[in-house]
Amino acid sequence: SFNPMGDEIVFHSSVASRIVSLPRARRGVRPMLQEFHSSISESREPSLSGEEALKALAIVLAAYRSADEGGEVLLSPV
Image (cartoon, rainbow, N blue to C red; front, side):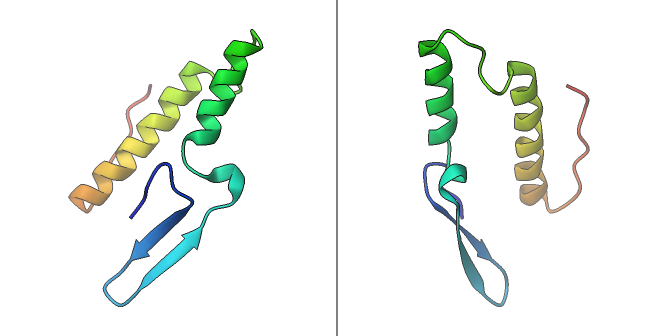
């Protein structure tokens, strides 16, 4: 299971579950929101462009779809 604002991910399999703690820099969406806020406050471009963010989102959504459907999902060019 995964909580986007959390600090860990729980992996489940048919035989066991495993908890993985995320490093502070990788914890949820909070660092992304802080970077976005800072870019606005400092009148600069964010570290990740909108185009690159859309590509990353497409990958994440494909991963969710793959997990839901239990198979391979092909990505379309963004």
